[in-house]
Amino acid sequence: MFNPEHTVWILFPVLTLLGSCPVRSVFLESDQDTSVPEGWTQAGRVAASDRVQLTFALKQQNVDRLRELLDRVSDSGSPQYGKFLSLEEVSWLVRPSELTHKVVSGWLQSHGVGACRTIQTRDFLQCDMTVRVAETLLPGSEFHRYVRGSRSLVRSPALYGVHPELAQHLDFVGGVHRFPSEAEAVSRAWADGKQREAGFHLGVTPPVLRQRYNLTAKDVGSAQNNSQAVAQFLEQFYHPADLAEFMMLFGGGFQHHSTVDRVVGTQGGGKAGLEASLDIEYIMSTGANISTWVFTNPGRHESQEPFLQWLLLLSNLTAVPWVHTISYGDDEDSLDPAYMERINVEFMKAGVRGITLLFASGDSGAGCKQVSKGSNVFRPSFPASSPYVTTVGGTSFKNPFKVTYEVTDYISGGGFSNVFKMPDYQVKAVNSYLQGMKALPPKTYYNTSGRAYPDLAALSDNYWVVTNRVPIPWVSGTSASTPVFGGILSLINDQRFLKGQPALGFLNPRLYQLQGSALFDVTEGCHLGCLDEQVQGKGFCAAPAWDPVTGWGTPNYPALLAALLDK
Ligand SMILES: *[C@@H]1O[C@H](CO)[C@@H](O)[C@H](O)[C@H]1NC(C)=O
Ligand SMILES: *[C@@H]1O[C@H](CO)[C@@H](O)[C@H](O)[C@H]1NC(C)=O
Ligand SMILES: *[C@@H]1O[C@H](CO)[C@@H](O)[C@H](O)[C@H]1NC(C)=O
Ligand SMILES: *[C@@H]1O[C@H](CO)[C@@H](O)[C@H](O)[C@H]1NC(C)=O
Ligand SMILES: *[C@@H]1O[C@H](CO)[C@@H](O)[C@H](O)[C@H]1NC(C)=O
Image 1 (cartoon, rainbow, N blue to C red):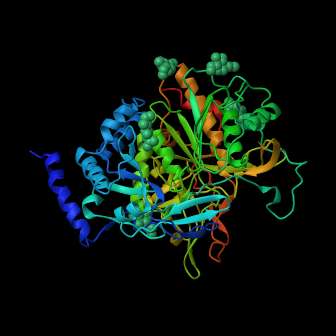
Image 2: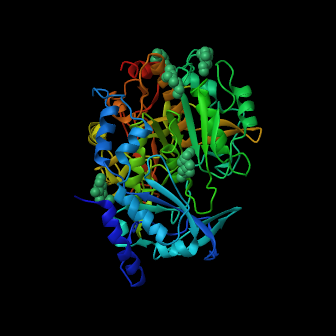
Image 3: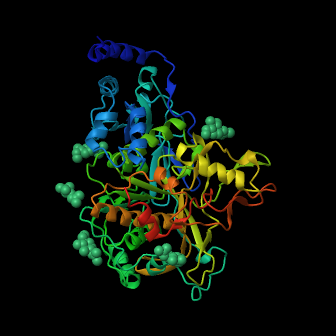
């Protein structure tokens, strides 16, 4: 019989021996872009005795089974629809083998790394160690310090390897490469060089959203156990006094909360931020009278990856909110597929628990990447391009002075993944878009076999936000539309809970079955693309039914509730 204890016993002396002679190590994330993002400057090598924190993503078991389970619990036609797993059940399914644990812990211990913490699903290990040890464990790595404003980070500009024996037990090591990167709302007040006339436009406020999306004063939460959350990774925080003032100014006519029930993590030390204020003020305006949490972590340690920290937290808390909205995104081509595949598994782990994850689709339209001089392609963003999350694009009012129908907001992120193949749930919708459009961008710019996004949209233009006690106009970005849609899904969860039904969980399979009914279809306008002769600044254009600019469209609450309340 196979005996893991025995295997490890023999393996270790061998590993230790090999440590002293040159062994070709295996690069875990060889496609990771290690260039330094704009705004960060290198501040030299980190001293060998300084401490870093590395996060080891251990190879999980039963990932195929997890994917099957996610399909079943999210498919309203399946007898298992809504039969979600507890965190403990997820843990039994995916936890790494004893062998994986022994090999990885043995390797760490043999280098004197003792201080490691794990999480409930046992598939991550987080360890503190000196830079000297980190650089020995991960041959090739070289830790440098980077600064931007008052923030500093420790990262390696060089790729890292691990011993071949370890490579089969690890997906990647966090805390080595990725810089934080987040879609951030901006005020367009000064965008075109001159201040706009704030006096004349309508501006999006909670009553405007509630009117447009058909929410009556009665449409607020009332179920006992309902909850929703925003996750933020910026060095900024929401201020309780801003939220209170916002609700005083704009919260008339509907019952709502004016305080956050739980803050998980550490709020940044800086000023209240526009993005942080926006997320919380708006999820609590559509998802009114629903208990709301904020997950916030700008990266306590210089070597932490805040987004990864949040995923670890989700798998380390048995009770977490049902709906999460997140405005985080990186260029898909800057990340290694092995990293993204593993992050997808983390999304699946949330989905089988009945958790709904909404990501902003990004604010650069189709994006643009130069492949060679004079030759460009569109540039998808991740996690927006993940098949296991629901991605939200942006719209604006046709007439900015009135609550009218919506058209494309030109910044709305959308397109096709170059890494993940198109999931079954969307094949029909996407193909009918591709076949129905008379004029599409040249085929060389995108990959029609990939996961297409966004799935949905909501208003993303001209919001009022209170930040540092001041109401700011013209705030825009898909990081506004995402919490708005999140709050609406929370209201639907609420009605489902009152009827004794399970949460919506991973929405996409069910959403695509609706074929756009219950949503306001957005059919006008195009988003940004490359500024070259071939496409002249344009990406894709909206069209009837699904499109890669605004997805299926924006929420008509009573209709969407009716459509999602029958099972
Ligand atoms: C996960 O939670 C446990 C218990 O609450 C804690 O001891 C552990 O340190 C946490 N893990 C991490 C990586 O923070
Ligand atoms: C919702 O809003 C739209 C447009 O504002 C309106 O035409 C419709 O009648 C409203 N009610 C329902 C139940 O859809
Ligand atoms: C607000 O929510 C609470 C439960 O959290 C509920 O008791 C109350 O009735 C709700 N208010 C309205 C107007 O539905
Ligand atoms: C609410 O949560 C508590 C504790 O987690 C649980 O005992 C109770 O059954 C839940 N109630 C509903 C209506 O789901
Ligand atoms: C297009 O996407 C597929 C998967 O959806 C992938 O296998 C292929 O490499 C992609 N092509 C390019 C040029 O990126």
